[in-house]
Amino acid sequence: MKRVTAAVLAMVIAMASLQGCYGKMALTKKVYRVNGEVHDKFLRSLVTWVFIIVPVYGIAALVDFVLFNTIEFWSGNNPVAQGEKNFQYAENGERFQVNARKNGDTVTYTFNHYRGDTHLDTLSIDWNVKSGNSVASFNDHGNVTQYQAQRSKGGVEVTSTGVGAMNNTSRTAALYN
Image (cartoon, rainbow, N blue to C red; front, top):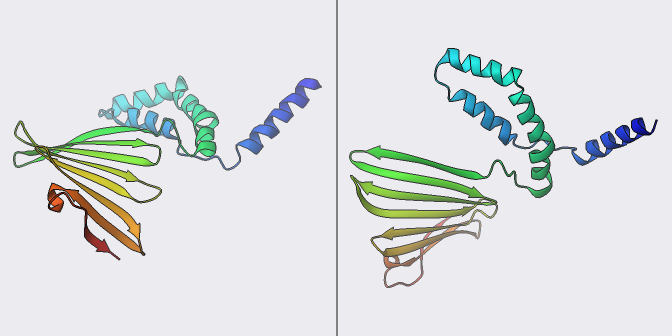
């Protein structure tokens, strides 16, 4: 009888503490993405069956729901959803290597610009997704110009400092309403 009472009590506590805890299911999505990257449709089907039989999908979903989504519910951050992505874009001999990184409420983008193998400039953007404010830094061979975008008066005010802002002074570059 004590075991049944303990089990029921544990279920009631779990149901109360996990109420409304849907979350991103980031781990499960990553497992799906791994399976989706298999290009051959027959091999992808085989991987799907293996992931079902071995219960990779089931374990990922359980760990996501019980652990990571609960962490996300209480802290606001899913540790699996944090991360970094790298990609590049090239056209007409110009190449941009892009690094995107999310850490908490801040998303950081870094764009490195190349012509052939020669590095031309770098643009870094830090964007706070909660406040909507951002800071950008443009580095052209050591000449750095910084831009700040902040919400103000029902719009967005962009200010700049550094070489591109003329005489290293701060000035309002644009105001969007």
